[in-house]
Length: 204
Image (cartoon, rainbow, N blue to C red; front, side, top):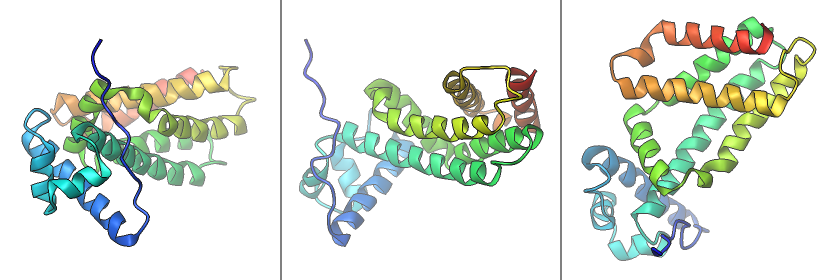
């Protein structure tokens, strides 16, 4: 049986200086991951890119896996925050407006740094997606809240399952568009067809 990889940070930053160090380390991790790829990334390389000693890095993170996972969590939280902002504005909007806006927000969030998003997606798949479950639960909770406002018109009766379908289907389509690298992510057809798919699923 293989040895389990430590994924949690060694300690949480409690002072402003510590928070700045962690922030610099995560920014450096993003640059190294995108520029060199996972195989060539190392704690030494990340520390050099951050301008800190590798000893300082190890005060907060035990290995590169924990760094990448912390970066993935941060990135996912930013996506959820952007989604929450848009969904909050559309609580009372009719489905014909709200669903395309939800899709648009998901596409926009994934286009902020698409190369980093792809790199993180690949590595988190290897490390274990269960570490990001709390973030996914937040996204689904936002969608459930919106579905509750329109439950009388909905075809699905299990709102938790419906929210999971909406979030997962949208993420899968957007990730596929990013991976294709042929301009699909910027094609208006992505938003149009994905919105039509969700509207048909939810409201017939």
